[in-house]
Length: 369
Image: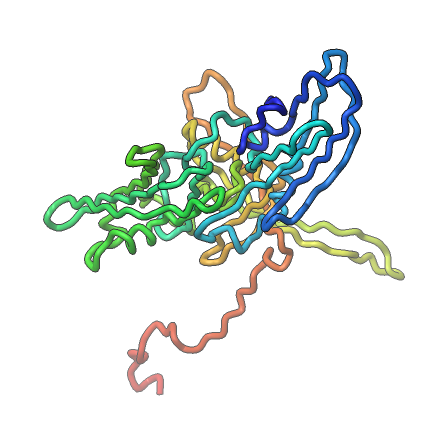
């Protein structure tokens, strides 16, 4: 736990869940406030604390408070938004007989160590579906001069081709989000003759002052497609958009929930509710992918890519049982529903405008005239 006298200028929220004020001999008044964007005060409290037998005062759960305030800013519109992103709040504590202390507290719902520039995600190796949104964010941690390097290997008629491109990182905010899907990489590195079929794999490297500080590798999954797999988007443990693809068995179930009773002499159904649930299996998971799957389950806001549309969902059940020792990789199954009732059963009414005829002109003889 950080000591109040040496409060860092920036920290993760998990490190801010308990502050200690030492060498206290009398009742102390502490004013605590949390400021959001543009200095708006989102929380303010003044309380009197009394020291324990060791002369210490402990201020608890301030990190959890910051996380709840940051989660209020999560929206569906920002899940694939590219650019600078704020995921922290300014925490200010004013103690009688002492100077005002302030620290930037960043969203974090897991125990984390050193706060430094990195990719704000659990996974460093990914297998991606062509065309599926793959948001990735960088934790800037107050650093300047960060750079991204995109590199990809292509297979051409004349052999293998390696291409690279570099871009600057906007470090004005806590994080910087960018798109790392196959379409973005092709637009950045590919030419007119290069397509996703030519793309073997690609990497994204984060560097600071010319030295690599983090890296990710993406392979192209050609064994599955968007109809066979389920691609999810969510806000991860860093409070930034992330993605995870469930490539195992996908099932769909319908159920009816209602009350029954007599209306006159007829036994009728009352308040009928048809529920559509989906079960998605991750497929075999590496250790790294398993942590990312758990991160998805712990997310306060989750979405599924339904064709070209992103729809919010709610996870209702998790089926995961891991035994050791085991000769098989790990996997888990989740049950989820569309959060919006109107999205549960989409309309399939499509007028036939004569554009999908089997034959341009029926090849019949005059018998059919």
